[in-house]
Length: 339
Image 1 (cartoon, rainbow, N blue to C red):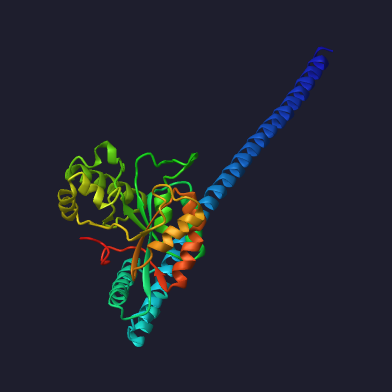
Image 2: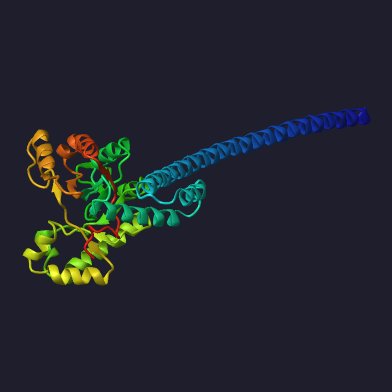
């Protein structure tokens, strides 16, 4: 009897051990499944995040490439137009067009040819050798939130202009404190416009014209900002209030000497719509503008904070084009730049 009971106990223990082993296997199996599920879930999440990051990077890179290529194409189209205007030999012109068809090549050489053609064209206009005239649209004191809308108008009319920028308090748009204007410098440059220097602070009544050195310091500050924001610097500046204001404070000669030592030229203006003060109604501002246009080469003073200027900008562009003006961005070699 005793041995039978012992055998039963042994059998029961064996059964219990088998059951425990089976349960342990199930637990291990469930744990393994849970681990596999977690790993798969984490991998899926990481893949989704990676695709989102790659998609964002690709979209940004594609947008930048599109803007860059559109800028290059615009320059090329204008360069080819000017080639025709200045009667460059057709065989040479064809060779250049073939060379430029690959717009991924260095933009530096293209710009060099472009500005050489502009200078030739400008000289012919000034000498009255061709029927065309030139208007340089310039916008002072920006960037502003309204600059976006002005850029849209210029793009719609396929016009390049010059923006005389400042830097003080421009990270946030002065006319929309909920918006950033920090990237506007690069946007202007990417669209092919000239981003020029209007000093960093524009503080006429804050010591800007206390000396030629003080003015030069403000120009250098703005130069550094433009280089940081756009990667490029054009050595053209405009005195806040014009060079006459520097003369009024008795520092024009010393300031010009300082600018020349820095490689800068400066430019005033020959035409305007009066938006630097009170331009009146849009109709009055447009009439002021028309009354000021009387030269073969015009430098038009405008401000990209002015809603009046924005409202009549299409009329300004159309009027100039109807009167045989070619609208161009300022460049350092231009005869309008005092060097």
